[in-house]
Image (cartoon, rainbow, N blue to C red; front, top):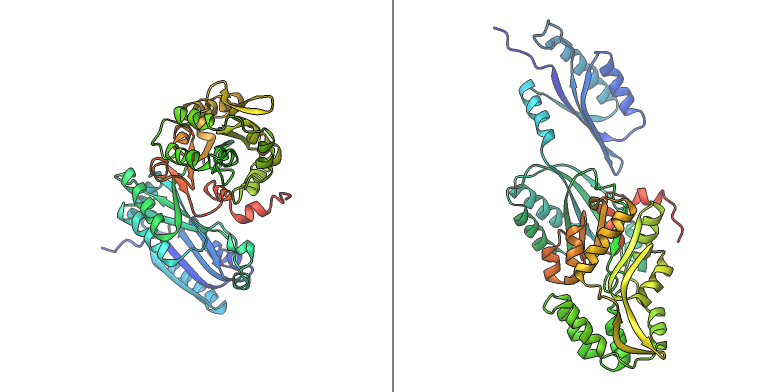
Length: 427
């Protein structure tokens, strides 16, 4: 009995990239009537890695491809690769193995994003080790950040001191314990000065339409109420309460009213001085400009004050703001707030309200915040991101960024630096 010859062949090619390689290789294959079952190519530093899965047409009435035909095709390719100074390998693939591989495409797929100032081999080794330990397989790795000049690094200029690096891994499989997987990634980020985002590869990932932000310690690198308290001479007392409230140790409403009462008598002119000096968070201007150019809607949902939210709205071009309104009488802070306090529950309600007004699914909403009072809105948004957040917030949120600036959120949406440069967004 003749052994059945596989008519499916996996061919791999490596070598110096050259114009026209794909055309010349597939032309040879076309002469043999090959069907392309899969194809992939990548180029790193002008070195090509090219793979193609082909099927030869049946030559013996359904009993597999002729070994002679396969050999002639491979000899033609081998001669061509030798002339082009390319390395070449091939292996037959059984129909059973191929069908098993096809059946795998329906399995859960995820996107793992590695964010760092400088990606290291240790980071990749640890990340890939965790995925393997949880039964997940990495199918593809792509660099989203741009190429970096060694000379610019040596100069240590300001731009490169805040450089960002990002790798995106396409992962498939089913982790038996998603919470343990997320905890492992979170522990890794603390060890390696990197962030790892792990999210489902769904249709919504690159189809978000609304981004809502906390203000204090998110859009700006300060807690405004602490700045006001310093001006009022009660900085230490208020800062201590603020920290405990953001850690989730105190009721937000009660602690907010307690801190606000200490500001009684503060002159309104102080607010303008503080607003002009608000320190913007790294990457915020780039992020907002880019989101606007892509048609996203943006909002500030803050437990801070409308005075400063309005200032940022005008400066950055934010669409919606919701915050607490300071009560003023005769140009002085009364220590009270007008209307209801914007707490965590109120933020989540406002997020849903804006999404409904815009006709946007909650799956298309991104929420970004750092404190315990942000957790409700982070949990209802399709993508909730704890940004440079308190430990308990990082542990509770689905995604966390602590290493890079706010503009690194664009990497989580799948945008590469090349994509963003093509937008030509003005400064």
